[in-house]
Every structure is written in structure tokens, then in C-alpha cells.
Length: 354
Image (cartoon, rainbow, N blue to C red; front, side, top):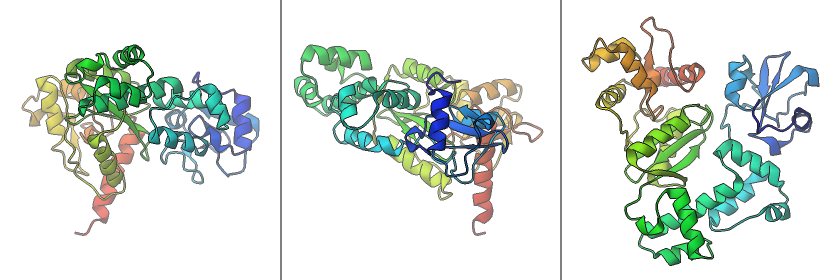
């Protein structure tokens, strides 16, 4: 069980109370029905001995539980809960502010609960999240021509030395080197299949992975090395466009993405990734067919490995590659997600006017 989960007694009480403040923290599986729910689900609550708890929808699904038709736990999993929305809005409006535990309590928030949510959904504490927001704000100001000293004070820092240390710790380079430094801004994008982590530099999108995939940190490390860049939370035009196009894709109104991509890799990997982007919407190919397309018919296993190394899910559609026998195989986000994406595309095509 995740170290970030509250005690089972606490979770069961939250489930009985339909406590929305635990949204995104855990999911409850009902043994007698095989259904899993959000903490705030309005369905009749089961006895304690009939409940198991999961830190993610993925673990619930892999344990054989089906999503509840009342609370729809797969829909935009990871959305900040209602109790956290005012705080998120405050941070969006004033990223330079510094909030301590006493400030959170003054806003009626439990610092431990806030810390747990940020650790689970952003991989860092609330204090670290605030610090990266301030550095991101300062980096943007400097890149746009502001002076280092003004960027520091406008971003909430009281001393240049403290600003310089924090800036370099976060980005890997000093404020004075910002013109040459490269940053990949990251943002969580909510989808019907759970939250995705998106990353984009000034040139284009370079990361789009399901947030619960184990390979996320590995992929970020590869991008960091190949682009000589640091990851910090933030938003740019490419991330905003990615979110817009993903929403249209899941709504069935977009079949071809037009987001500029930054996909550094070996020449072989890039061949494979280019070939993936030629698979038509709603269609599939086998790994063997992909190998033939890049004129490497003997390299089926290597093609499969390159598919697995794809860092931009959905947009570079590795979900459209299946086994030679027609069975679903090899998808880092989970075969249940692969099935969902293929079914979505087939459904959209079948309902489109001929």
C-alpha cells in the first residue's frame, strides 16, 4: 500500500462520511460487488470487512475491480478536490506568495492533508511546489528581459543570495545563465484515463505520459540528458495547446494532432516513432508490419523496444500497434488504457458520416 495513504480507519470513516476532501487520495474497492469508488461516492456504503483501499485507479483495475457507474472514478482522476480549489486559485493568481503551515491552518486547511495531496499528485511537498512556482515565475521574467534583481523581488524573494541558491538548485544553472539555460515546463493534464504528465520546452512538446506509469521518472531523466534541460512546474503555449487538443481527442472531435514535438533519440528510434505517426486514426498495425515499413523486417523486437521508449503517448500513437495475432500487447500505460483508446477511435469512426 502507498506510504502516502492515510490509515485504513481514517479512509473508512471518510468513505462513510462521503468526505470529498479525500478525493484523489484513495479509492475504495467493494469486495462483494467488485466495484471501486471515489471517497465521496453517494452509493450505499459497505461494511468495513468488505472494503479494500487503493492509492490509484490503476491498482484497483489491476486487482480486478470495475469503476462505479455512480461516481465514475476514471473521469478526470486527480482533479484537485473542492477543499483545495481556493488554495490552487490563490497560487495561480499569486505564484510569488509563501504559505507556511500556520497560513494553511488560517485558511481552514490541514497542512498534513495538503502535503499528502501534493506529494501524491506532484511528487513533491507543498513547500517545494511553491518554491518551483516562484522560480518558474522568475525564469520567465528573466527570459523576457527583466533584470535578475527585479525578477527576484517580484517573485517573492527577499535576498539575491537566497534567490540565486534556490534558482540554481531548481534549474541547474544560475539566474545570470538564464538566456542559455533550457527548461522543460511540466503540467498535469486530466483525462478520462487518469492524469497525464506533460512537458514542453520553448520548441515543443517532449513528454506526455500517464502519471502513474513507472517509467515517467526514467523518461524525464532521458529528456534531461538529451536536451540538457531541467524540469520545473509551469505552463507555456505548447502545454496549453496540448491540453486543448487532448480534450478534443477524448471528445471525439479531433483525429490528428498538430502540436510541435521534440523527440530526441537514436536514428532507429526516430524512424520507429515517425512510422507510428503514419498509422491512421482508428487503425492498427503489428510490430512486424512496423518493422517492414522502416525497411528493417528482421528488427521486430527492436521495434517493440523503441515503441516502449516512446515518450509522447497518444499523440505518437504506439497504442495502435498490436501483436501479429491481433491481441493487445505491450503498452506502458496498461492494456486497459490501450483498449479504451482503440475502442474510442473505432467508435468515433463508426459514428462519423460516410
